[in-house]
Length: 207
Image (cartoon, rainbow, N blue to C red; front, side, top):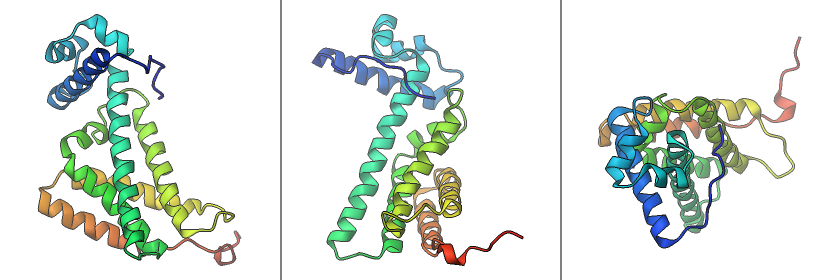
C-alpha cells in the first residue's frame, strides 16, 4: 500500500506537531499494536487535536507508513555509510561489501528493536506485508548489484534467497537479547557472503 498525498511544506509549529504525532503513534502502536490502536489515543498522547492529525495524515495507517518510511531512511543511511566506510578502508570485494551492508541492516534492526517489531510483527495496515517484502527486495537488489556489472541481468534466484533470508533474519534477531542478536547477525551475514550469482553459462537448461 502507498501513502496518500499530504502537504509536505509546513510551518515550524506544524512540523513540531507532526513529529509529536509520530512519536505518539510509535508509543501507542508499540503498546497496544496497530490493530487495537485508535486515533483518539494517539492525539491524547501527543497533546494534539484530531483535526491536527488529519491535517498531517489521512489516518492511523498513514501514521504507520510514515513511521516505516522514517525507519527505512535510517536503515538506508546505515547500510550506505557502512559500505562507504568499508570502501574508504580499502575494501573492494563485492561479496564482502554485501556482507557489510547486510550486517549494518541487521544491527540497525537490533538497535531499534522496538521500532523494528512494529513492522515485522504482522500487525500492520492491510497490504503492508506485501510492501515490506517489496521494499526489502528492492534494498537487496541494490546490494546484490554489487556482484554484477551494469549490463548484467539480475539473478532472480539469488535475489529471492537473500531477501527472504533477511526477512526471516530480522524477525529472529529482534527477539533476542543484544549479545545473542549480534552474534546471530554475524552468523547470518557470514553465510550470506558465501552465496554467489550464477553465470548464465552455469544455468541448467530445463528438461
